[in-house]
Amino acid sequence: MTGFGERHGDVSFDVAPHQVTVSAADGAVAVVSVPFQPLVDLSREGLVAHVLGEHRLGLLLVRRGGYGAGVFVGPKLVDSKVGSRHVQGTTKAGGWSQQRFARRRDNQAREAFAAATEVAVRILAGARLDALVCGGDRRAIETVLEDPRLKDIAKLVRPPFLGVADPKQKVLEAAGVDARAIRIELTEPQDDDGPS
Image 1 (cartoon, helix red, strand yellow):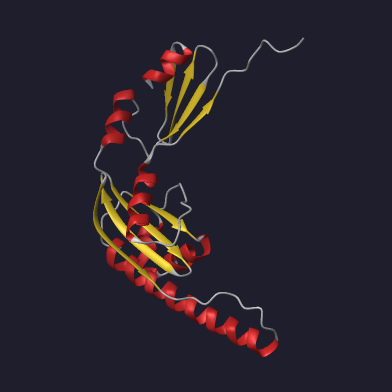
Image 2: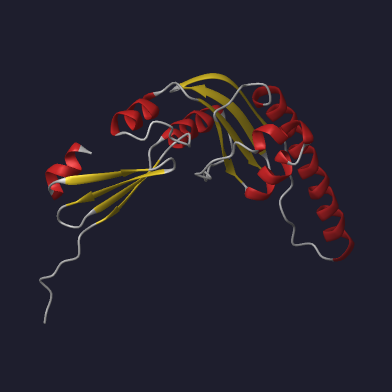
């Protein structure tokens, strides 16, 4: 926040368990979403220590044709598994053929989600996570997290929901970086020099 103060003047901090609001003398406001909520030590030093801590982050990515799960301790990926299952695309055929393809596609999607669930259980269920970030297809994630074996980690889901390509190892690693990024919403001061 040093750069923010240099650009906008004196700053004041309002530190809460879920967000930190920094208000500047010129009217600019920066709202920082606290990662790995809640923040316990509500001081500026507490925020820095909290952000730099070695949090255990779970990552679950599921799309119709692929899935990935990983555990990060700080920036290091310590356990992961990715996989894919073929799920047939849509068809332009009509009548019985279209219905047959739709049934086959639904069965393939169920099998893919079942495989994603097994990976999530194996990698995430016993990982003692501080938070879980998900990405891919929302309905697919909801389907996986409905499994009773994942009820405890489903309670740990935190934003952001990540938009990702088909989960491969590199996509999982990049999503881990994105999931740990600190999000800041900046509102610039109103310009009072407009026409009167």
